Length: 218
Image 1 (cartoon, one colour):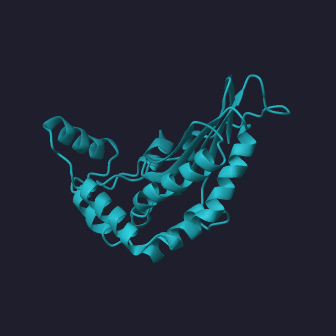
Image 2: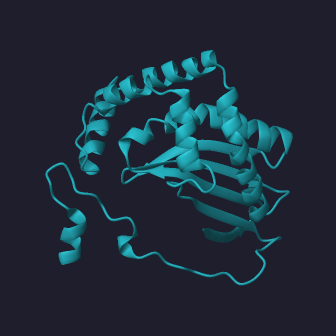
């Protein structure tokens, strides 16, 4: 995790469910509205940890994940992290109790959003150049993603949760960034553990070039 001391409020940013395989990424999107609704109700409305409680998705170098952000003036980051982990332990029940009608609504809404692209020329250019910049060259991605979204099932979401979100899941990766207030600094000394340059090496691109190996030679 990363720790910062710079404001009068504390904050926590936790990223979980990171995954490279495209087959698992389709489950991140339907998890979002369910996650946001549940985490907002629990951490903001019920526990009143702070005004800012957010949930979203992020993707970098083909690695996609769920991101939770909590800003608080009443609890330090370690406690915010403990509360978030407690919420995530209960989130499996939320997936199980979501009605078929509600799940269908989320699925169809997200599928429609995915293929609602290229409405403007500049938007289309940005989308296409993003594929080039990330060396994926999947220019039909929105329509294929939409088709995959409509095939998402409750069992698939539960399996995704068990592997990538649940504590102890075989594929779970988590990065936690903590911001402490100046009035309540972290206890004990801070340690800086820099990551090596090759921690997230780029993958081979669509032309068969292994850029990680190429960089190693240089």
